[in-house]
Length: 115
Image: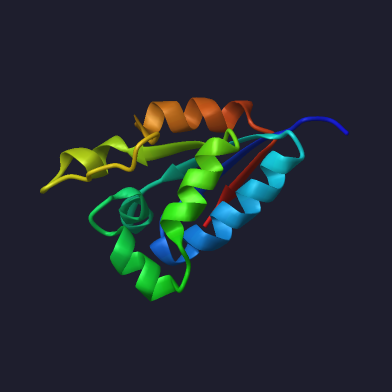
């Protein structure tokens, strides 16, 4: 089985639980998995919104995020979401990235999936 580079782009917080679960499955197969969170999707990375999103989605997002990070999945929050308004208070382990980072990563990936 060959290792693939898989990139997810998440713009809706309602898709975050599904994407995290799918990414964990890909990571189990020793694939390199990266997830970029933008727009509403980036809210899932904000410590202040996690409890609210957990109730909304009926999933323990904090557990899924930690499990993903522990499994080697790279999580990126959009730098524009972090800088605007009151910004985001990112979950530990999440990196800030911009469009250039996403595009460079996407060009090198085997699969790019948008949710």
